[in-house]
Length: 459
Image 1 (tube, one colour):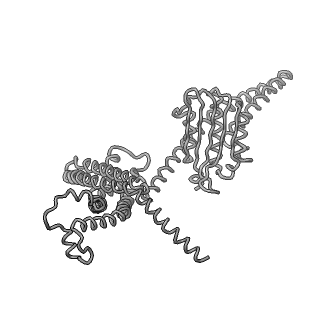
Image 2 (cartoon, one colour):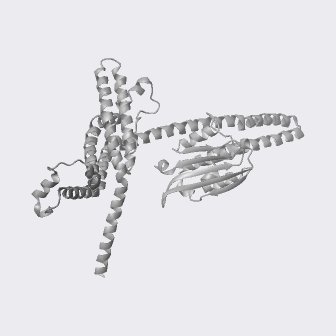
Image 3 (tube, helix red, strand yellow):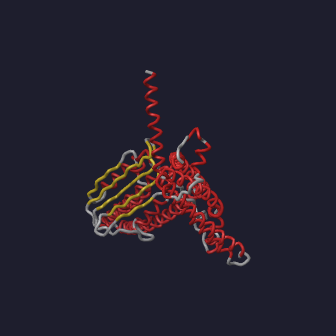
């Protein structure tokens, strides 16, 4: 049993090595092209950047020097981006884009925009990379690359192209080697010694070419990742800006909702309550005058106004915090909204959303879906719609996204209008760091989706 296991391992080991070696060879042409191209890029970058930068520094005493230095930093960024793009030829992992704008949202102006590259360390690292680091490592890697390619391919084919080289009557280096090592080559002719040595060198250099060129490409990748890549602080800065943008959108959406609620209360229940007050005053006068029939009629009208005002207040309160949502969860509340819509609605609601979403997400989703159905009834001319609500899972037990779609068969043509309709819903979703998508070609159908990250909201 032990012998069989040992033989199996011995049989699998070479297969694993040759498979890995084959994958390395597959990346070798791209690495070779990159190492040659990046050398050309480095020579151009050091010439351009050094000229521009030192000219700008020399002219700093004049105002014109500052924009020249800023322009140099922008050009350095361009060279760095080109370097990272060329790295794609090697098959190595892509390097993430740095955060180029770390200013707080809302800050701007001419001087802030002009000096932004000066205040961002990434621009200066790109300048150092393009002026100093890349030319040095590119020169070394270019030299090694050309040596390995020329010796490897040239050695393997010397038997062909070497025959076309003019040869004198004596002095061939193969003869010197043969005379120095008679025990190895004996009476082998000079030409045979040269072909043999060139072939051996070609085999060695060609066999090791994937490792050498791959290692040089990996060295470039490591340097570029440290100097041209994204930092952890970039993620924090992006997170802060996204939080600020989401907070601003949420505040704006809530402000718009409050103004709408005030308008609806003023135009609906408040007017009915005023009318109810007038009816009760008239009822009091009729009762004092002894007119029972008129008093009864006024009482019936007052009761009707009171019921209407109560219904409107219930409808308004359900838009803020519907009792069904609080009592039975989001899935039941969405199903109730769909059932109460005067359209034929097909629902696909994942019951697991109740456990995954937070209360603020549930309220926003409920409000968005209710508004979308209202808009579909009022404006789309639709006769049927579909409501889908599902979780997107990154791994078992970890829901990361809530996807909600409302699709109707209406006439289409829906779009964003600043301060109205879908734009307000987009701000509500943006307040939860989500994305609001509208696809509504002319003639329909209209598909509106809200995609809300649960991990960001939960944290």
